Length: 259
Image 1 (tube, rainbow, N blue to C red):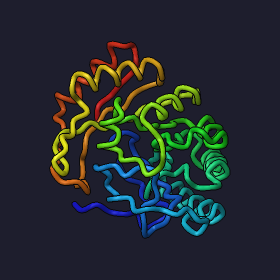
Image 2: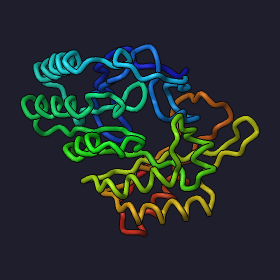
Image 3: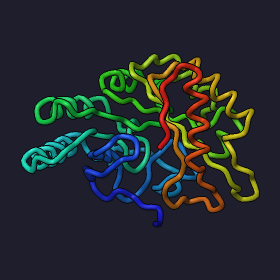
């Protein structure tokens, strides 16, 4: 399956490896990826150089209306739902009205699906913005990406589009002190343009584990690639390899699951 963009504001519900039956919200453009990372494994493809203008994002009222319509329909159909999930074509916290949109989603959830969790999939590059941190503190599942423990691997896998380092990412997560922080880490091996890719080697894993101890998350999601990637030459980890990493996390006293 080729890399793809989400062509709707609300998509799904879909069965998520990590979140169960998930209704997705794409705050970003429908025809391009808007992100502060350019991850070599991203299902949405490569990130092009971005200029963030208001017309890059769906407006908050349109998002609210679309979400209410979809949740009402799901409720009328008596369909199951586990999570309302902010994801889509890039980094959702880039939306200039992210905090307001989160509040709208919380209000609609409370009205129509009070038992459903609200989740945000974020690469943690916007934790220097207090409004983003406050919004993440108001939801159930703030899921923050940490794929690499060294700067070299961070640059090779996540390829940041802004001036930020791996150390800054970790420090921002630690300093934000977000309630219920969940770390999501994608592990992959292979080769891209002659550069070895491997965030599973002993040194990388030891540093990653030490950073998890500093972060002290509620839980850790460990997974590997499941779809076609924009970079060729990447290798998916086996279930056994992922479970080996999970056991190392659990040995620290931190909850972890592989997907």
